[in-house]
Image (tube, rainbow, N blue to C red; front, top):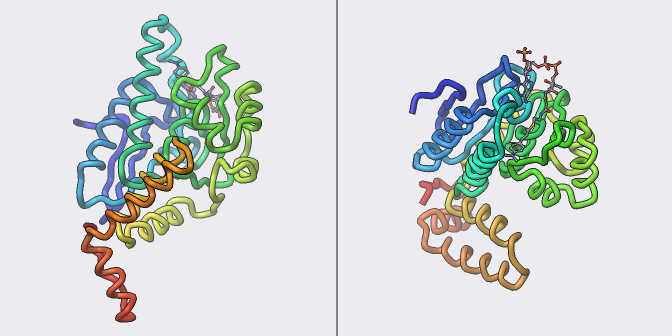
Length: 258
Ligand code: DAK
């Protein structure tokens, strides 16, 4: 697929997906969502890529939301289809068995905050702002915001943000656990982080994602079984043997990603 609204770059084991509609603060319309989907599928299927970073172009916004101009004339059926498409794309990001980091520099509002929350975790610059302002447009969040926000920050804080539509700054996002770190050199920091993750045993990294995601959806006993099964499966990999052998031989492990 030829991309018009996103950029997909690959640097060694890292892919960087940039939402690239800076004139509309990277707002998400149908075409942009379809391109994000195609790009994420490409990353999922590329065995040379270990980590995906998602960011926004222009230095002002990560993504300022679903495209309000695009949604203005929608009827109920079209609104439902648009919501389902966004949910499908964000669920794909959440469930691919590769780490996905949101690098946020500016506004992450509405669908933008929801996109960031579908990533495994969020790192932002100090000028970033977050919120689910949809009730101000008389709609609910439609791309998973009512579900992921309480899972990340707790129900009380999520409900306050959802009911008020308040926009919070980076320090407040850090305080409530919506972002992991607020940093100065955003892309430099996130790329270093991605390279560190890419240097680890990749099957183990992917199983960590599966264990957290699946385990958080079930009871603790079932979750422990999920962990035990994935832990056991690591022993079927070359990297487990190399990792433990390298430790015993007091040298750096050389992983091959399987
Ligand atoms: N959509 C379309 N265009 C947008 C946009 C958006 N979300 N946000 C900004 N833009 C455009 C502006 O219209 C402006 O375009 P021009 O006038 O230059 O053509 C350009 O980006 C620059 O924006 P501003 O001039 O407004 O820049 P400021 O610095 O003054 O303000 C701002 C920045 C981020 C505070 C402001 O642009 C703003 O408030 N934007 C809207 C933020 C927002 O409300 N986001 C949530 C969108 S609603 C559902 C499916 C999906 C959803 C809900 C339900 N179902 C199917 C159930 C999702 C909803 C949303 O995400």
